[in-house]
Image 1 (cartoon, helix red, strand yellow):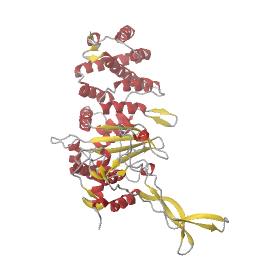
Image 2 (cartoon, rainbow, N blue to C red):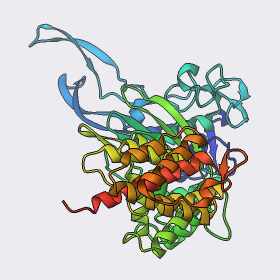
Image 3 (cartoon, rainbow, N blue to C red):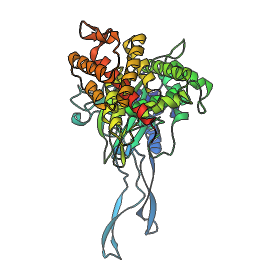
Length: 496
């Protein structure tokens, strides 16, 4: 008869608040069902799902026949094998190799991949859920637990020792490998995505109805559907969210019920459910995973509202054939060619600003002046970029719409006049203005050299170095963007 210390109770009723353990708990209940089970039964079931044929062959000695036989080698599935370093084991025997005339060691059966959960005899307090129960020391195969604080301190910076876990949390930690989404950028970067909400029943329905149908299978680059991806955390997280947003209004992969559930989790309905968060872990693959960053994004509902405003605006102004595809193109464009590779650091910076609700305009300006204006066959920003940027600034920074129109109109005139008179240097001087005095000096210069009129609104500097209630530096940055984009668009329309 199995004792209670050798069993584990699975249910969705008690979230821990830890994104990894809660996701793993959902995996356990989905695969085994709610109830009480022998620990070893759960462990064996998880290991079977985490091991796969490696494509290589090995040899073992069949003790009954005395023959050397071949077997198919197995290993932990990628990318789990970057974390679990426990090898398959089997008894070995040393015999004389007649061909090589020396002794060789052979397994006496194909090695078995297995993991053991060693629980203490005395009960203690679990570091994750707070239950009093027999505990196990978290080991390196239970990502993302702290074993070496120097390596995994990002997750639990206050922990000076390895974690002590009850059986349920330990098994959930292992099951987490079966629940994550991941995206690989070759040997450059590896991203992991875990969605979380404190309502585990809701989380289970979300993974079953939404994530499972969207999860990619058999793709060596990962199982996460993304609109675009790169080596950096924020650009790839934004690419994942954009891919998710696209399915709310129409989808060829999600049912109507699933789309309603996704909409509720993202606050897109009158009856929103428990808020959804996204955890993103980024690092480098190798012999092991070198973790470099962990970020939580918990304002997904606000991001989706921005996305809805953009799609509506692009549709109303008939920019592009498909509003979603146009939004993807707008954010995807921020890359430069470096040899055979694309460098996407500008895209990551823009995505960072969007995800953190900061100002993306300095990065758009930098991309325009340091990349687009200097590239061969230089070209303007993708159609709709200006509209998406100005809408974002209205929504997030409450920037006055009329002032933006004034700024955009003047910037357009400035850029076209500069192109006509071959005065790109004026635009670089504008971009490089370090203070309001520099800014007005450049505008004054442009007024006389290009014979253009500066709107009066721009000429009134207010307390705190603001113009029309906006920090002067943002006014300068937006004007620089509008002007350079108009310059490059007019240039691209010239014959020859």
